[in-house]
Image 1 (cartoon, one colour):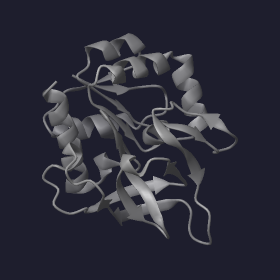
Image 2 (spheres, helix red, strand yellow):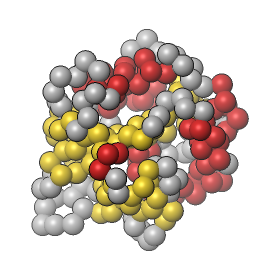
Image 3 (tube, rainbow, N blue to C red):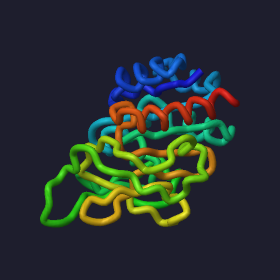
Image 4 (cartoon, helix red, strand yellow):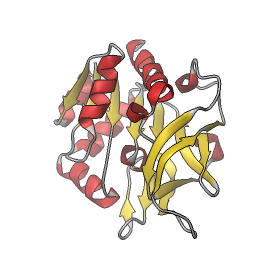
Length: 204
């Protein structure tokens, strides 16, 4: 079972529909104890970083997420869910994140359009990672974000995209993967990424 965490800020319907299209049976969960039965977990997210962390704290998901990750089973953060993996964010103040991948989430700075909204191409940094199975080139995926991750360890950057500079698009550490874009809205490339995650979950 792939658990999709409902903490009041997720794009649950589009994620679950995409997984169902691929033949998986996702289950939306709103109680921390439900993660124990999962073979994989997805943390989606749309909205503000601070509000998301507050919701996770209120619903007691933070210790459950860390406990699940310690099992070594696959974990995927999508969009805001990826940003929450980091140590902190300066979105509307300073907020502590989950601290699972070292780094900080910051706002785009420069004389260009913010948010980055639309299709942009991935540049793969580690095409041997399982998440890139059957993806021979980066392909284009769909972004909507005003904040991006500054990653402390370059080995944790699996893919970037070019938006006036290199921008972190996919991160990975051990059994954790995070995607800044929306794979469920990213046509065949996005579906293949989700399929690769689902296959890894099925092998657990």
